[in-house]
Image (cartoon, rainbow, N blue to C red; front, top):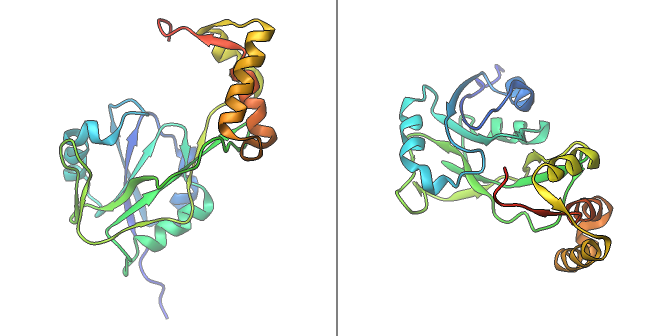
Length: 210
């Protein structure tokens, strides 16, 4: 029996998205078209519906995947996307959660939530001005999340903070760390999260500097 044709995907990139971030997806789908949106990578989708809808109209593939800068489509998610966009889709819209990573490991400081509408069929979804996307039928959440890398090392993290803030004294740092650790929950944060919070507590962010 012949294998069903693999779906083609139009990738809407919010910020710079490289081939390294989508290499697993390339192996799973028939073709990838990338459209770069000139938006900040963390821009809320609801604030840029006109740009997103124009990109959807310009897409040559029926299935659209929105990926932000620093996000990677892992192997398991790529396989799930290929199946979800196949000849018998379960829905026309899929929410995908984002799992932050720090030092190459999952960073779990907050619940992942329900995710954003990231995978959609262009003929059955429209983003409405100032509101939620309009999807024909049920919206399903994927099992696998996107991976969002933050810093490859604690030294890189500290260097980034030092360029944008003022170093705290030890007691001030200890107080901020304690509050943040209690807010997140030590069990949820685990070792990697506690390292992140400790480095983060070392500097007071200067909002006038970028």
